[in-house]
Length: 189
Image (cartoon, rainbow, N blue to C red; front, side):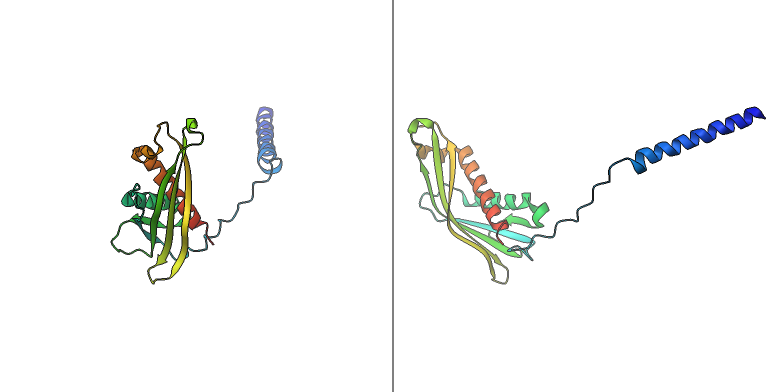
């Protein structure tokens, strides 16, 4: 009988130690849990009510270095890369579909300036464009005119105009332009 009460006391002490341990570690001595932040409010601004954008690009420059279809595709990709935040999808093309708005871009000028001094190998691409986002009902919701994009790159050849013949450089220029344009449009309020 004495042994049974001794085991009972051991079990009670073990249970009490467990309760004290749980309270000490979990309920009493740990720092407060961080407060949950409410989700951010939806973006408001020029893109309100727009869920699908068709991107059209026209190259009106005399040099025609940037391919219109490629630039339109890159701009649509830049929008889609942010679709998780913007809740907007984009596609390129000339044909009308079920889109809520059309983003029309015109490239006006494409030039490359040689490095100064020439031995640095740094050149600067200057691409001037205009863009307008118009809803299906004809409402103009965002526009920028004659924006000059200045993009520096390294190019080791003598004639800086040869840079337009380098597909990697031209691809990079189109990608940077598309990212900048989308950022200007999405940050407009």
